[in-house]
Image (cartoon, rainbow, N blue to C red; front, side, top):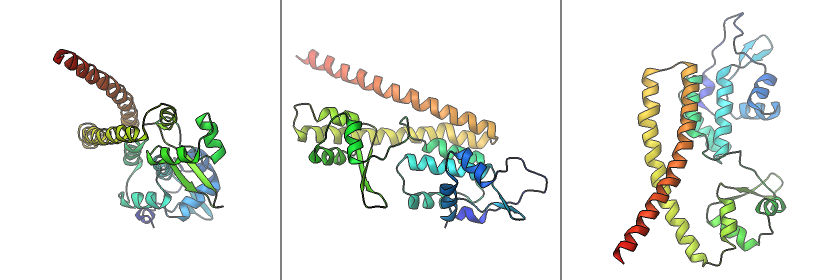
Length: 253
């Protein structure tokens, strides 16, 4: 059960600022009421404030739902999300949750899609053999799961389309694996370094100097812009490095 469940501030009578019913909360988060109630039953949301028979939810509840969606966008299970939310301070406010969500927001565009086997072929633009599906899964660009009825579901990861194209190129699978491992190794190290810089040079100074909701929203926008610029810089940086390698090779010859 989430530690956040212990935090249950009751608003002052007449203070309805930011308070919502369960229906309004679900609508604001882009979820169904049933899903919102299910998340609450798992302890992912703190208890609502009570006024008679009415349950009221505030901006903190909405921020936690947005956090849940951000984590699901990363492929986290609800069990893992519960553990993560339990690690947050029980009194974490909207601003703190906004920063956490900004740091966790996926760098890819769009929500991950869970597809049937037939839909996966449609997404790929051609019929994939079982061997090809397993190979793309080995590359880490496809996640396989089972729904409540026991049917297989497939979730393409960003880069799935590249893998589909590579399978049509006449190169050894061993070479594809080696290239994939090299990219994964260097990109993981780069991601760790850049995340550390973002945390130390952007997020921590904000925590020391600013705490308002407006500042949190501005920080979230700033992080989004930094993501876009970082991706562009990585592509151009690789191009520069590859061209320097070609130049050095020509010079040696």
